Length: 316
Image 1 (cartoon, rainbow, N blue to C red):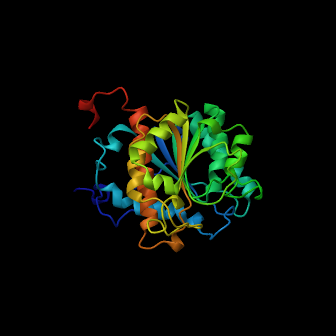
Image 2 (cartoon, one colour):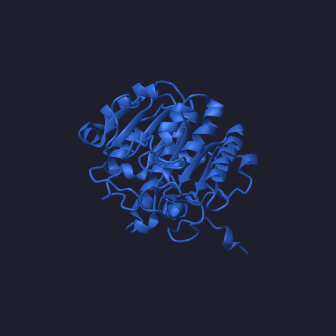
Image 3 (cartoon, one colour):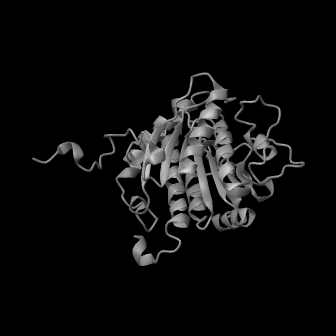
């Protein structure tokens, strides 16, 4: 008798417990995974509306809308044919202990990186990127940062745990090379004097072509290892209302996806999608946008690290 519990599941309703319905791994370090999905349910560093700690669950749930497709349009290959993906669930830490959270994130990420895993982290507020960068810098040295956001997050006047200060601390800690880093979608005030990052602000990005933007990004980062962090509020609130600090005048989902697809060849080594706050979402459109961006980033990683030396006949 056929085991109905093991049937392939193409429903967009059932079994929305893991990202893209990929296997849950309780020991991802010793798994055969290439990419590990890691949820970081933390929002104690937020300065706006709280709720991003619920982001990883919402993103996973929305990702089942993408799981049935098999080969993600318009990519010419099936992601899961070329990479092994596991979901490690959400990282556990003592609720309310931000210092311990930092230690746990850095330790977990360091163990995964030492085992040659790549991490797609799901936030959580944007502060989660800082302990992740600490782990990545230990392995790869100084990184180039590609940062999609409405805010520069380079403010020096926040507390030790503040989702607006990560990219003030990261260069000072020697984690990223500002001269090879770029921020896209910025549309809030920042001190432009001595601002080490190149910036394509939202008004510029909305007027530029996709090709112009991708060319500027690739020329900026060169061949350095790249950490790409995507704050969902880079998107206009019309496309991502479910976030703690929405800012009008942002980018469209369509344009962002085209930019990401145009970055083939980027030496992507780490990635996160953050700041989804589902309590402010409408019809899960923010969570779906975040899940889609996460899937695009995994395709981008695969093109560089798995398919670069393969012929087109073997890619599909």
